Image (cartoon, rainbow, N blue to C red; front, side, top):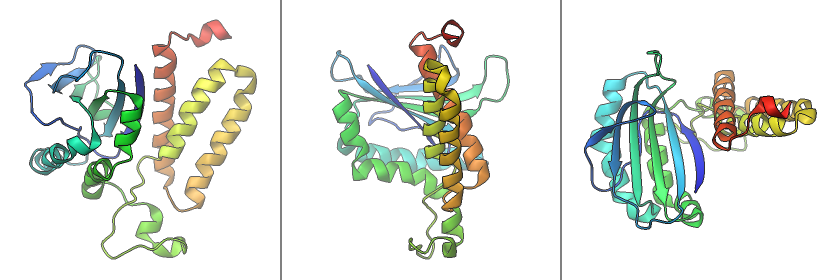
Length: 236
């Protein structure tokens, strides 16, 4: 089974066509909604979407129920996912505030179906929906003079900048590669720093977006290592 992890700005999850009753998440505190059983019992691909804590949870949940879920339901066939597990986090195992607000796991019959679905206009429409409503605009969107090569229209809010996906990808790659090849860790960190700097230099992100993306990447990289049974201590 193949898995792809993303982090989107706001707090919610993607749903399948028919809502199902909530169930307790065994390894995560919160309520989980599972929908539509997968079409095949064989290996499938999963895209995991993690959502940041919103500033106003009540406003978000209202929009999520009345606008976002209907939008997802209308685009499910085009996107092509066959099952969605939705989790709303309430606390960590030690009772602290969770780093993420919601999680969505979308199941596809194959990696090819996943890639095809993420490239559809329907997926972009769903992904941009919460960003447009609750996301943080990129620096050049707020101040168009920073990027002469981009045209920003009146009222435009996205591209949204929090967190930096490039930074998250760089951090997760550095975490995994630096663990597997510790003799090259310094080089990987230097490459990561160059990527981080470039995102601010081109007015695509604020420094806080970079910090959040780096933290996310560390978590994803560590999760990948742990899921594959790789213990950094044994490689030292």
